[in-house]
Length: 323
Image (cartoon, rainbow, N blue to C red; front, side, top):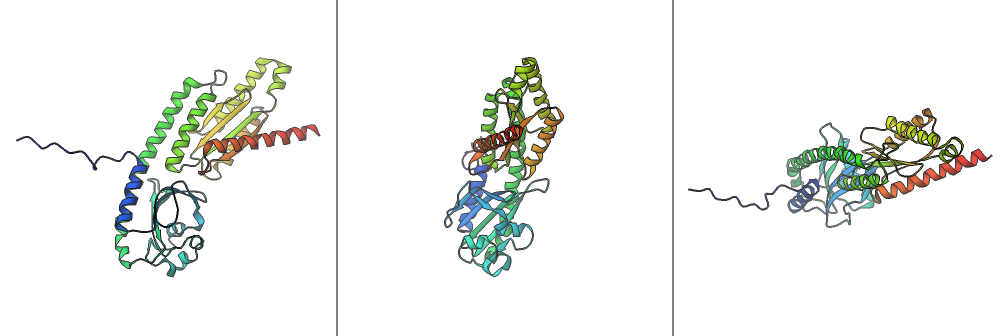
């Protein structure tokens, strides 16, 4: 007797973390119909909404809230319970700034933790009305959903890191011949792919804009061979200063750019300090601007801001030399 064929349907694996998070939120909303269910990521003081099922608050994917104001930061610190059927009688939640921004009378929150113990974000819910104490019985189920999401997230982030390394390898064909750095076309492709990753995972990233101060002067006074050597010294200084995951590019005659991936709050400034020190040690005079990615506007806008800050520094340096 032949076996019955397997009917493939809803049991198909989810395409990615985004799809699984949406399915988890939809399932939780059907079981525990709160006004808002969210999957979030924390980045410094930013609390980024990666997925949301909203019936009451107008919160949507991509919104950025203030992490220190949240119930979740207090939950993660162990100051408040993971389930609060009547959150207004829990002092630490009643007094949280977010409770002044939104009508919140019930709360559920569970951390999303990576394998190294690092907090990624939270799986959480709020509602404008108090809920039955019976919802406390659902905490083990919510924790399991969070743990499964965190497991899938960790695996997908590992795949993302591998893909990022492969992207860099593929872009070797799009390098600047003189410096060996990524050229402008390669830079634009890498930035576009990193922006997609940032949107999916809420990943922090930053950009650095660098412009040499004296390339034309060197070319005019010492010859183009000396100018080429200055460009090569600049590239080598950047390689020494950057992390293995960062991308350096020569995007114009005397213009360089750096993409810093997964850079924490304060980390970009530290990276810029290393870049400045490496350039100084190599005898390279340059103006530098930086900007972190804002989840609301993306990496292209961040680079525009970094470029503007670089030119502000360049003009200030020119003014000081002119005195």
